[in-house]
Length: 169
Image 1 (cartoon, rainbow, N blue to C red):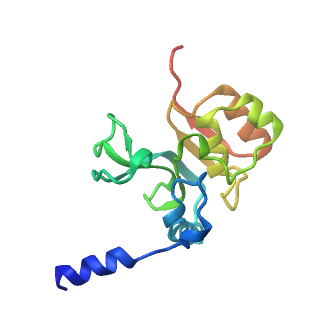
Image 2 (cartoon, rainbow, N blue to C red; image 1 turned 120 degrees about the vertical axis):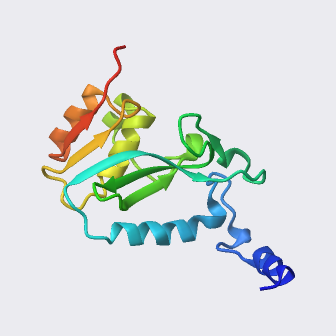
């Protein structure tokens, strides 16, 4: 394909109507395509053992603004941060993008969850809520997400077992 034709297609490719702009959603322009991919991931046949972590979608461009994140501990340090629930076979079953303080605008938490849980546990609660068969499912996550209250809450509310690392402090 000639470069000019590719650039013309790229310039006119839209996934969302610009007249219905939502300033609270940083991923507004690509939200429909993200939702389609997420729906397809959720329709996959899922097991009972999962891992939840953050994942970087590499991007070194300058036009993403605050959507682009820097995470020094990741192999691809610059990009878009996604929170992902995957199975032991490596298939992604659910995900959502990190949008700063607007990350959970589309999700609703109980008064208890808002009071006792911060960003990390809310990520776990959001991703665990889409597991089809929650009872005796096992979810593993790292120390960013782990708290004793979360482990207890997952067992009591969903019947889900969890395993996470903790820090000394």
